[in-house]
Image 1 (tube, rainbow, N blue to C red):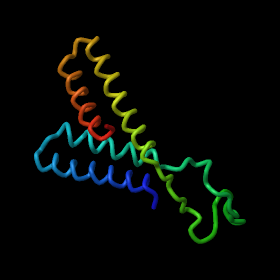
Image 2 (cartoon, helix red, strand yellow):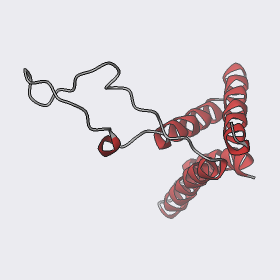
Image 3 (spheres, rainbow, N blue to C red):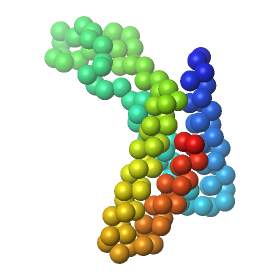
Image 4 (tube, rainbow, N blue to C red):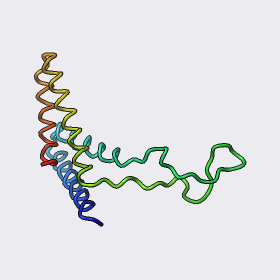
Length: 125
């Protein structure tokens, strides 16, 4: 395990521990934000369908794959920089949304998105 892998594992552990604390404290906004961040990291590790290894197909059913474990593909391994980039994108999305909500005159919703962005910023710094 490289130092980068260790950093991503530590980051995920911090997110999960803070999620647990937010759930116990019944902080709905923080809970939703941390769940969203963990889901974004999971999605970033997904393997594109085109990356699937080519294997033999069944002669009985067109398009099916045969063999032990043919459906198993390893997930991508994010570096710490990749994980920070995913979180930075989540932050930017919330800040952009807050700006749009400000222009629409919805200051309370904009403030909520800014609080969510600030929650995530702690994990990027």
